Amino acid sequence: MTSLLGVQLYDGEERCAVVRRDVRALLPQFAFGVAWTLLPSFFFFPLLRMGMFGVGFAAVVTVAGMVYLLRLRLSWQGTAIVATTLRCIDVSRTGFARAVSTAVSWSDVTVVSAPRHSVVAALLGVGTIRVDMAEKHAFSFVLTGVRNPERVQQLLHEVQCLRKGKRV
Image 1 (tube, one colour):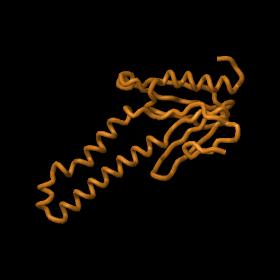
Image 2 (cartoon, rainbow, N blue to C red; image 1 turned 90 degrees about the vertical axis):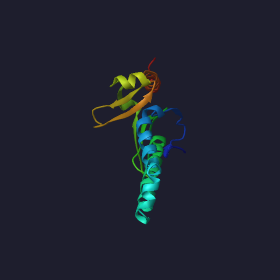
Image 3 (tube, rainbow, N blue to C red; image 1 turned 90 degrees about the horizontal axis):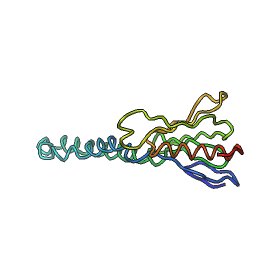
Image 4 (cartoon, rainbow, N blue to C red; image 1 turned 180 degrees about the vertical axis):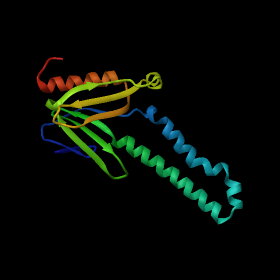
C-alpha cells in the first residue's frame, strides 16, 4: 500500500489525477493574512511608546497573522480530490493536523459537473468541481477554486468511464 495525501492506496490502485484549488483563488485570503501580519510594523513607534503592552500586542498580532498564513497553506496543500483507478477520494484538511478523507467507488459516482458561479471566477479561469453520488450516499464532493474546471470535469469523466468499462 502506498500513501498519497495521507490516503492509503490499495495494491494495484494507481493515481490518475490530483485536483487542488488554484492559488489565485486564495489571493484575497493571502492578502488579508499578509496585511494582518504586517499591521504592527505600520504602528511600530506608537506601539513602542505604549511600553511592554504595545510590544506584547504587536507580537500577538504578528504571530496570529503568521499562524493564519500557515493554516491557509496547510489547508490548500492538504485539500484535494484524488482520482484513482478504483475510486474517487475527497481529502479535506480542516485544521493543522486533522485531515478527513472520504472515498467512493466510481460505480457510485453519478455526475461530475463544473458549474461557474461568478463573473470573477470566470475572469480568473477558476470554478467549482462537484462530484455527485448515488442515492445511497447522502453527500457529494465539492472543491471550489479549481483552475480549468471544464478540463478537470472531462478528465474525471474519462476516468469514471474507463472504470465502468464505457467508451469516452
